[in-house]
Length: 500
Image (cartoon, rainbow, N blue to C red):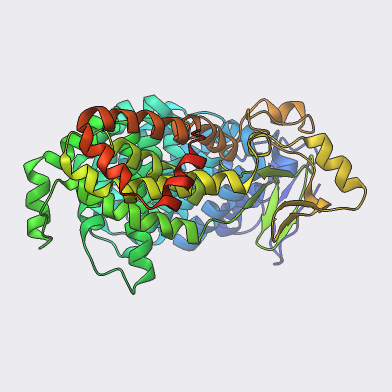
């Protein structure tokens, strides 16, 4: 096979693919390495070994090196979970590209970070070299936040792929990055990085909070500060921060309690001119009660499509290889606002167990929110529907030309119904044997969300149990507070808790 360039001078390779003939000027020879990478289908068995040499020889020629980085990224994506076969070439180039002391750093860093993100996203497992590279991200973020969104994606990839090994090696670096970013970026930047804090607490509820205490204190300040009434972005930031603190209270109650009582937290609030007249946890109750309505306003059913593809673009998806699409029904798993509302409900139920008389002053509000969350979830889908939806029943239904109504105003059209992940996290049988044995990044994310402790807890049971604790703590005062509830609110509470 011979490949011709658009110029008279060109490079060609012999039919056996083992020998390379080079003709033309040095620049043409340098271009050979990335030309190989642009044809991954033909080069799976012939990894572009010339790429290292091309990279070294093109030092100072930023445009050529950028082309090589882009080509390597395309090659990695095309290889998918076979991408480790090219690590011997890829990793040295990547290591050089993310070095902020490199002479061409200014020109190459953006594309190098995109290559880094693609490498992690396509990796079937973490390797020691990639694990070591994470410290480079600290250096990059200390310079500026120009590549914040890519950096956030990279951190998420490391959490999902590296797990405990990543945390044990880079706990200090994670804390440093979060502390650096939160409080020093605008609202858009905060909204991009807050999910990282959430997933860290979800995956490591006991280990992470002490490491990122400074970051969590900043979230408390964000929650208790005002000025978001007429600013949607600030409202979003405050709501997301409140949901993270609610998760912390549910998954590591002592950690948030200690943080709230820490004198340094009070000093931070004073420095921000935020008056706090009562226990910080009780102040957070008002925020949770307020922001649960924010999540309710955006609580819509969502569908997420994932395709293990060789090539894709926005608006169009071109399937190569196995041509498989996976439609993930992610109600109660990917419906973020639903999870956040439940998390806030669980946190408020825990507040009932505090040995503070002021809890009774907020009892009506707490029970009102818990009731609305419970009844709201029950109305969305039945328990059986939310746990699993049969692949066969949906596909059979769709084969008849119907659409599947899941919620008022939302339908699942049959066009892309080819495979579904059920609630146990198992993929239906349409995946190829090779693909199904290696979980994708998105599949790993869903496994994490399926195993989320928030999903496992029953809000009704927690409210019942904690109400009993509250009654035991406060005695007659509790009874008096319950008696003062509006009759209709009390009736709804009994309905939500299935009380006689």
